[in-house]
Length: 326
Length: 88
Image 1 (cartoon, rainbow over the protein chains, first blue to last red):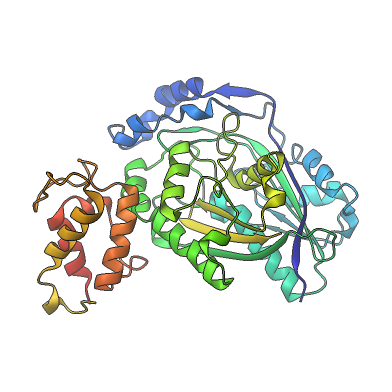
Image 2 (image 1 turned 120 degrees about the horizontal axis):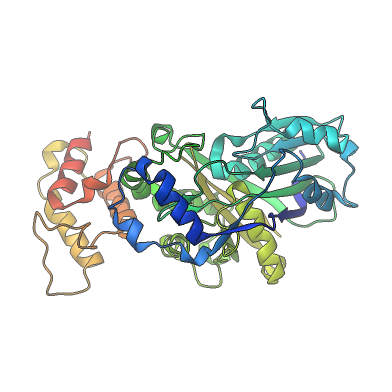
């Protein structure tokens, strides 16, 4: 049975930015009629001002933006022709015919031996689903030694969700290998989907901005931290770890308020939780965890950490917690 | 753990004691059946998590199975109703 090691990872966001004030105005002008409860205290209390701006692709051409990230990730580590599996975890980017951009990437990499999959159904936790899928393939069959995961997300429609998040564009990629010098091992990924919440926030981001905010607040938020708490503790139990054994927790970039909530819910210390880089990015779907892996690497945290936990949630409604050992 | 509907007497008092001990820092504040726990901020998303875990542990409710709504945590009466109607 092959182990799954993380060999390299990277991300890239576009250079063009839109300030949050502008996005807020677009929301008020064009989308606020589609939101069911503008009187909610959340609209008033969580301003999202910490985000400042998000990056956006101009003249977007699906499948072209992520290539430079993939090339950085593959450099000297693997050739496209050596890839055994490619998984697209993009949430909102598709080709004109509605298909994943995976096969276009496969062609560009000349990865003729790779099986190509797409796992966008987990919304913003699709990255975690991709990790779990890759790990399952690598453990089940020795043939899968070199696995590339990538995403490229380009938002169409509303980017500003009051009190919750601001959506930015971006691309990310990660190379998983069974034979590598890397010591960063993907050990565990636990996912949970509460299908009955699909009507509240389903698997497809609504392009018209019909965000059922009140439903979200009523049905998902009461359970959000509880499910994360349960999955987090399940991962700890699975791996005979205690909370104090966790050196670094990476989370998705929704809002500073959400980070504070997670810290309290899991009773994390200030040192354990890495506050993600969202100031100029906003929330970049499945790329958030990789953005924060890069950000914590820049700060020298990731290399020092022995036990790293990554946490995401997303459409479905779904939650996931993964454990990486260094 | 209470497992049957016949044993639900005292549910409201148990919940009241838990909320008073865990979430109310000011001794002068006393909650009654209709105190608006959400509107007054006595229960927020975090205290809701610990309250859910308290209910799960003490009354055996499975929050992965039952449908809940934020309004279920409005006051002691709605919380009692949530518990009683979902005890098997």
